[in-house]
Image 1 (cartoon, rainbow, N blue to C red):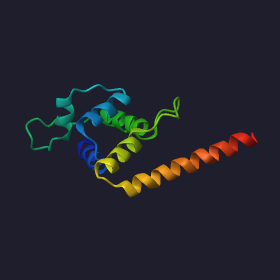
Image 2: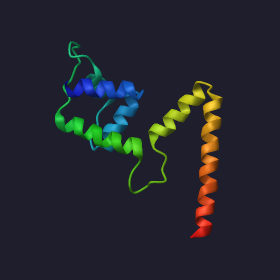
Image 3: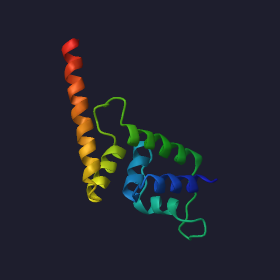
Image 4: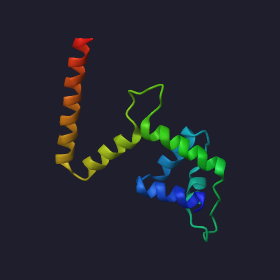
Length: 119
């Protein structure tokens, strides 16, 4: 499977928009215009198709790790994938899932308070 096809499958599976793919490339050390990102996503039969090199694809994967997990230097930062997932739940009107996330956050805060008291 070619790099372009893998990029497209990752993007679809994670519901990534073109501006998010562009941001992921930037996190990996490459800056592309929106039209270049669209060219990577275009099918091989499309006249605008541009082949994604191994180096560019590696940069995307490295950027995707940072995008998904956050940076090691700032572990308190909420990873974008979690933020996007929560926004998607809100847009879908899934209040039950939002309530469950809120309960998990409250439980985590409570556990952090008891851990700090024992230290």
